Image 1 (cartoon, rainbow over the protein chains, first blue to last red):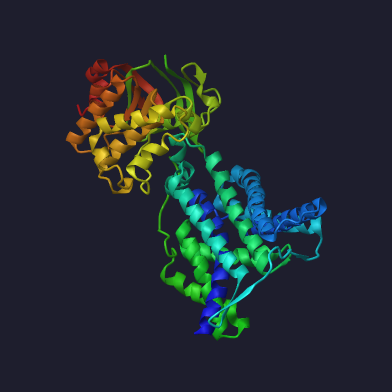
Image 2: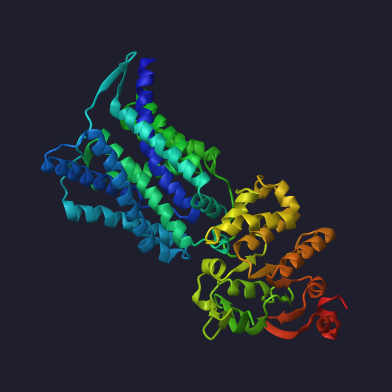
Length: 307
Length: 237
């Protein structure tokens, strides 16, 4: 039982990463019907931006002679980095995707992969191939709850992720921009007839997705403090799988599938040798998709491509 | 003239849809464009809303402003040109109220929005009853009401209507046109595109007949209703 609960805690942590990244994939898909294949690398960029901001804040505190408390640095780092990474997302939309809005979807997909490579190699050129370590920021405390070991970082990661998802949910359900996003997910060609500019809603969606990816990147850095330019590839693809599993374009689906993916991975590794983990975990997902090809909440739809 | 269209050319890829049509509408008028399926009626409305590009040499002016300089969302939010598209294109995943609110997204006169929503509900009381229902669950007639109501919320200077009678039972059709008349009485110009020529000409003051992307006839509704060619081609003899 303790063994099970221990793994459950780990699964929740990994699920948080997957879910936060998957949301970005799903949001962009739901409004523009394209997968932003650079999204995993935006997670990486967000993590590096977090590293930069945290280092700067710590340095600033040290040079002024009053060290900021770690939790404050962490909060500021998350908030500032989310904003900065949001701008990266806006740039990606503006430069990479907007000129291709009416182009075949394959062109957009290839562009996304290209942007990802540019971000990876750009990082490599700028910072070198050396891996960088994320500052710990808060002291790790381990609690023993009935034989299950839980660190304060794990609790923090899960709570911050859930908090962000809740905030996103409210934004989408309660604001006029969220309403425009929901409308776009239904029929994006009819949205301009409402006086809503796609050039406002599309960058905003990229900004939010990138901000969430940045939060994931920082939380990831807290848990696994070694950053390298290629860290976003595998995580990004896994989150993409979660977005598909949740149902293309479904926000709730992406969040749930992100957590489910975390569970499957951790529990497969619990039973089978860990070298077989991905093979078995993704076979399970393939099986699920065989029976639910549109994912949990996705719908088969044919969109009218002309107004 | 409120809306002036001159020498409007439009093509879809290589296929020409409009071969230089010209017409104009005065403020407060009800004008209809009639024609067969594929003649270019919807294309004309799409071009005015800037959803499809007009080709070199085309000229469109609305209240003295060059329409071709405006992107589609600004045509609605800055010029006040509302468009009820073919097939209604409601947001089925949004409630009736949300559909109406979304249409006010870029409006700056926040104070009037509430009043306008009340007005929509007074024209279409059925929508008030369905306020919190998802638009996708409405009946066909109610959907058409919402499409018109939504357009009214987005802009009130001119309303472009693409086949508002489509799929409506005769009685609903008549009450829909009564509602449009009410909107027109309050000062909104109406440009109507219809396959049902008799209905359109009875409703409008003037009309244009479009064939294969060209305007072939124009006149007052009475003239067109009595025209032998129109009678033969569009009014069933």
